[in-house]
Length: 250
Image 1: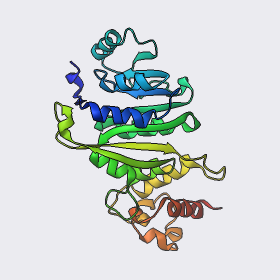
Image 2: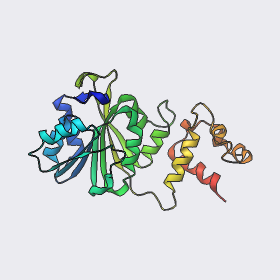
Image 3: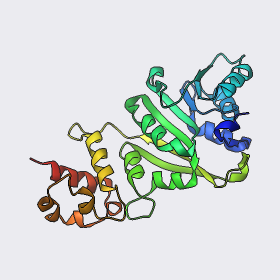
Image 4: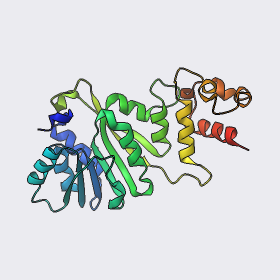
């Protein structure tokens, strides 16, 4: 059941309980679970949350969950692609789940786009993705995903999860990450424009910022800025924001 979509189900109860505690540290919260699978984490979330919404794309698993939790009035099963589901329809929420590798980035983006409606996000992801989300400037893992996440949230790796905790076991280890939204960005900061700029800077990681930005900005302006001689991975978010302001100043 559910293997049609390549799922690896987390089965170790101690880890499931720890994820649920991180997602719902206080009573009275609403939690959205992405990809509940067979409901192993769902069971723990329902115990802790005032309301739970489980979004499952697989119709077979969705029906299985309806039967399994038919006596749980706090749980709503939504059969949908999470990237199409209206996450903003449930008020202030926590978002949790075991994220498929191939759509981790768009799910993180959609979650962070909730803005003030997001209380926190707790995700089980592949270890390499966790490292990229939490990476600091100057390291191999630091890239666009690091900037996109850390610009809007404080990212913490809570604990590792061995591949042996899954059935069937995947080929790689995983980790649990927590994203705590930062306060609203200053009105002077255009977050969308800065992310677009960062995407250009990281377009080809081995190239300098100057070479990545050629065509988007005048060569003379890029040549005049020392920062453009660096690779994007060498600049902090604050430095990328300062460079963006300088290049877009009238």
